[in-house]
Amino acid sequence: MNIAYTMAPGRGDTDLLLYQLAQTMLKQGRRPCGTVQINTGRENEGPCDMDVKVLPEGPIIRISQQLGHAAKGCRLDPNALETAVGLVEASLLEGADCLIVNKFGKHEAEGRGFRSVIAEALSCDIPVLVGLNQLNAEAFMNFVGGEAVVVPPEEAALKSWMEMACGPAVQMANLSG
View 1 (tube, helix red, strand yellow):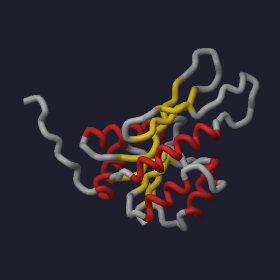
View 2 (view 1 turned 30 degrees about the vertical axis):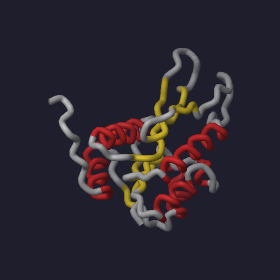
View 3 (view 1 turned 90 degrees about the vertical axis):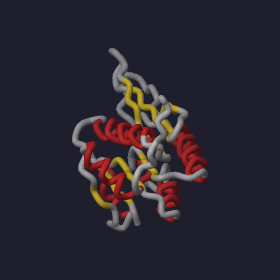
View 4 (view 1 turned 45 degrees about the vertical axis):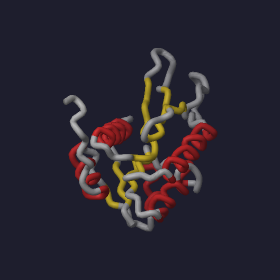
């Protein structure tokens, strides 16, 4: 089983690292599938908006709900998340060098969300990289039977994992000349 995870300490840091990794892969001519999260601050309006970009080419889907300033509950829009899951499932069938899942979150911990897509990728020998937080780490480890490897939340380490898991990058033709 070729599955890895990364956990960055700062809020939004894992999202940024996985987004940058996906961009690097695309520039190298690779075909990553999955989602990367894009957080957009809202001036004087509370928490950021959360969007996911479905890899490799989009669309971008808003996965957060605006619940008001006093709301304390989860802002995730489960219908939007499931829309993203469906698009990733379809994209995975078209072929992929790897699957990137921005977060193994509460829905995955409860058996929903990207859990089936992760299992499908692994059954097809497609490497999987997952963003993880401490809150869902135990559920993730149970899901993968302790078989996942940790990748330090550093750009160089993630690129190294990608090279090891996916093989050498396709050399892009020089289009300028």
